[in-house]
Length: 173
Figure 1 (tube, helix red, strand yellow):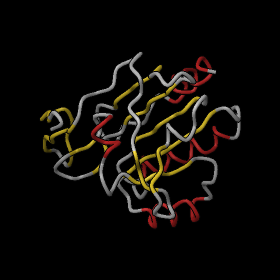
Figure 2 (figure 1 turned 90 degrees about the horizontal axis):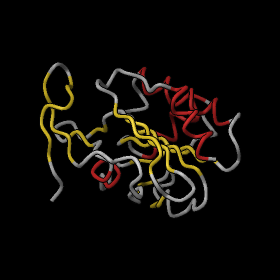
Figure 3 (figure 1 turned 120 degrees about the horizontal axis):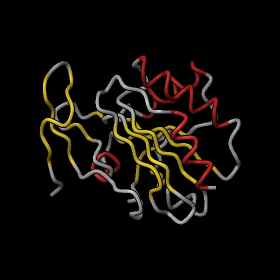
């Protein structure tokens, strides 16, 4: 059973329970199965060996901050090496992710749904138990499969430090 930690983050002004441990720099990144827009299971890390992976956990693409963050990473993806893969993970249903990406013109990042099994949320310490959404966090996984950057936002409305994330991606190449 995964560890539960109460009070790390608030939702609507109330303390919440985060399920799972935070990942640490240098550890082998936990693989996970999530659901693609076509409802097929995807093991994001296993299917991209030797690549640098950026994993962005967001609560919902339908919120303003998550929308802005995902669009930003989509724009940045155009300037990054072909050896970088960006995955944005939420508990939105796959068809909601597909609709959002189509409406937003997001086509360079891969959105994955953690709705079915919450494997990602638990493995990366991002699942907010009471709301069944993910707390905002960003991870960079090096070519060797180890975590080279991990940042958990203090509040759901905080955006990542994009320059720091992109610098970590460049160093991992």
